[in-house]
Length: 444
Length: 126
Image (cartoon, rainbow over all chains, first blue to last red):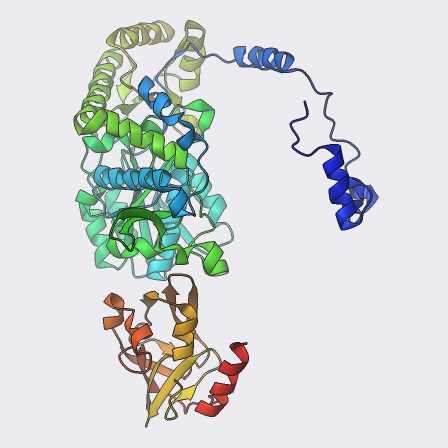
């Protein structure tokens, strides 16, 4: 079955209507030598053959590892109810909600998601979500550039290197000045960031906890930015906002997050969820969709996509962003997750992750030659300095079914001996005990 | 709805010139085309603009467009009431819906009188 909706007869009718005799005639504008000779595709196969083939490929993955990998993406437990709710066809196959009269359910779900994210971050407004945490940081920077009409962006080096790489790529042709302030042994150099703020600064960008796991209170930094007419942008670990000082409490202007930690599977890197929230007056600069609650002419409550005049179908080249889509299903997934857990459940989950990480840090630093990179407060992730290359330890532990963490040398020169270790509620004290024994063995 | 005592630009802004000062806004025709206005981005006091420069933007429920300065000079006042009540532009485009006041640095030129502007509106209305 070819899965093409048009029969050969219908195709012929369409060709006759526009006055050509074959599908190839539609491509006459492309010189024959420029057309692909073949797409090098094998012959079609039956469903059973395809399934077998894909299952064989999937079996090559190590899916039964005990993992302490984090670095921005975390292996949290996802309650079964989430998938059951999410897979309802009204949500699963929802069409883009441009017709409010036909999409009240989708719109209300997004509105509730926005409300939940604002409360989690203590911010005024949220949009309907963006593609992922990295996109959200870039869009936040562009909001600041538009709002301040300035070009200088100060970025802390302990912002995720993946996101910094995205920023470099996205801003290549934008004539912005990106200034990176080095970290200090994994700790954010708050004074260094402050020293960079001047009258040309559009925004200062930080992360909490930072890439190395350190927790900061950026209140003084954000106050300094405000004094100088610059905006403060913070990227945070979504789940931990239930226990940490929030962006709103610190006085951030724009707070973004990767929402994967709120009930989304790791899933080989996506699809994920870009959470974006901001303060009052910046809402018109916010990209993407925003759902608002209103009343119809009879006073009945309803939901609509609001402030659409910022979007590209209306503003063309002047649109706030070329994103006018959102990750609706992923956003709903995170909403279901936070609704099921509630404030107490989120706190309990975050608390148990943090407790385990502190237990792991204590266990692992009892090994000879293993120390914490610094003494900054941390949540559920911390950096170890090893007497050998982190890659060595990883290579030795993988055959035992354990991934001990993320090798920081991959992104930071001179940190080849540093290992970033994350604990989630899915790990147990027993897992940590085994990890410590394996590491002790690998180092002896 | 095209007062005779004002000058007009082809982009549908009006200017009321008194000595070396000018009050500007958008025309009745412009607000009608836009529909219900929901937001206006005002210029900043102290901003220096040439005739034809973009000085802000205006959003309605169905469209968004730029506002261009019809004159050359410095912005000395803006109608801050519009921030909370942009609908005043729909209700009273030539009065309470004024947008900004300029100190002219050179005499206004190239603007249309009410008859010339009426012709442009007639053409666009087809």
